[in-house]
Amino acid sequence: MSYRFQVNLGGILDVLSNHLYKSPDVFLRELLQNGVDAVTLRQKQRPSWRGGEITISVVPGRRLSFRDNGAGLSEEDIHRFLAVIGQSSKTELVDGRIPEDFIGRFGIGLLSCFMVSDAIEVHTRPQGGAAHVWIGRADGTYTLSPLDPPCPPGTTVILDAKPGSEHYFQPEEIARLVRYYGLALPVPVYLEGNPEPLNHVPEDFSSITRGQLLAFGSWIFDEDFLDAIPIQTPHISGVAYVLAYRTGESVKTGHRIYLKQMLLTERGDTLLPPWSFFLRCFLNTRNLRPTASREDFYEDPELDAARLEFAEAVGSYLAELSRDNPDRLGEIVDIHVQAIKAMAVWDQELFRLFIDYLPFETSEGTMSGRALKKAGAGAWVDSVPRFRQLRPIFMAQGKLLICTGYASDSQLIAQLADTFGLPLEPLGEDQMDLILDLPGPVPGGTARFLEAAESALRDFDCRPELRRFLPAGLPTLYAMSEEVRFLRQVESARDGGGMFSDVLGSLLEAAEERPLSTLYLNQNSPLVQRLLRCRDAALLERMVQILYVQALLAGGHPLRGAELNLLNQALLDLLDSTGA
Image 1 (cartoon, one colour):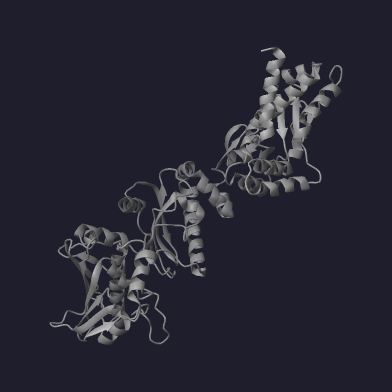
Image 2: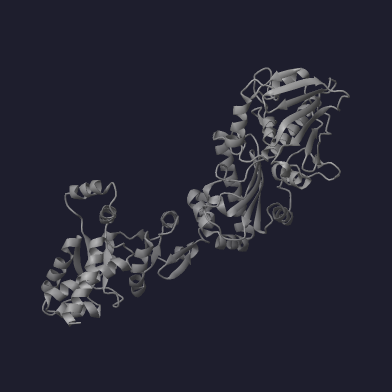
């Protein structure tokens, strides 16, 4: 007798193939899931039974038979669960909930087989019950009839390859997909004719030696790792492998993350902390909820708890390394310094663990946190170009300057100073007196020079100051406040045109008083000393303007249009003055 599915099957198949599942090969994942859940149900019905297994047979390019010796389905169950989409056979009759020890949740997995076959044939028999054959077709109909002769207790799903899907019906491909999706499953999966199961991994990694863990990781991921961190928490078990090479924060894939022993995702975005990009993880999770496609986790408090457990497990392992094997920890830090710095910012305990090993760029070369603790007074700046501009001044004066313009460094140095009471301070633009001395006497005075310099810089919202500092070979130093920095960015955006240029122009006009940046002219510089003696006001102005642009470039500040034109015109005027 023919029946119809209680749903628009054509629409469901479109959702499955084009929106829910990323690849047709998930049909095997869904079959594995159903098979394991059937075995789990039989074990719940008969707690003393432990003989569950799954066997797959393949006629290459044509047919696949997927058999489990689990609980099987009665005639009533078949009508209730195979024909009503969204109704899972694992649903409890009393409260409608699905127990946590089942993998499947939504009752639509079997339909994924329609992506590779035009019909799904199911032979099933419950323990002590009658056997039936159910055949579902892609046109939305299904038939149900007694199976004679009866099959053994359990369920067999038979699929014939539809055109274009033959490559999924090959023994090698089936073996690969079983290992990919079901490597951690607690039920052995056999390829007919092979006595060895395709899947088997330990349930608890905490008692396995480091060498065994590294060998397992090399087999799973086909690469060698620097170290292996066993993970065993209420929500997670497995291994986090430390990559033997430096990688970037954008790397999110390459993991094997399972939910109840079934592969869920290769991406670590949802479960793993942002700093964990230096790890490759083989993890099985428990008590977490999957999304409908079973390709990610559902955000809830359980997932938050799992994230925290993972971070604490990694931190605890590294803390043990700092005590028992500091050389190995140092090697890990050398390779993955940015990830380690991000971890240390996030967690005070990790900060105390790692800070002595972490490197920082300073005016005295690269220094570790341990060295900075002993270095005495110093300052830090959050801009790499500004650090490079100020470095020769600090070097010449024997003072310490730390560059915190890299990710996490500013927070770490501030935390270092606060935690250990170190005399380290941020260097603000209003603190330049710390490194610049007042000018000495100038024969004939400085009025003419400063008047020409002010005239040269007036249109650029910059004021000149004459100071003395080392090295003498550095003629100028440009300094701006955050307010000036913001207005320069607004001006650059306005000059670039675009739909918001008028709005940005209005914003600039609304500023009641434009803040000024400062161009410090070094009296120790032979060039500035020559300019102090110059009597040609026009030449003085042009030279100051050239020095202004040079200071901008040295500080890593992008030139605005007017400043670029200024440089070109100043150079042309110099050529004209020489008659060239």
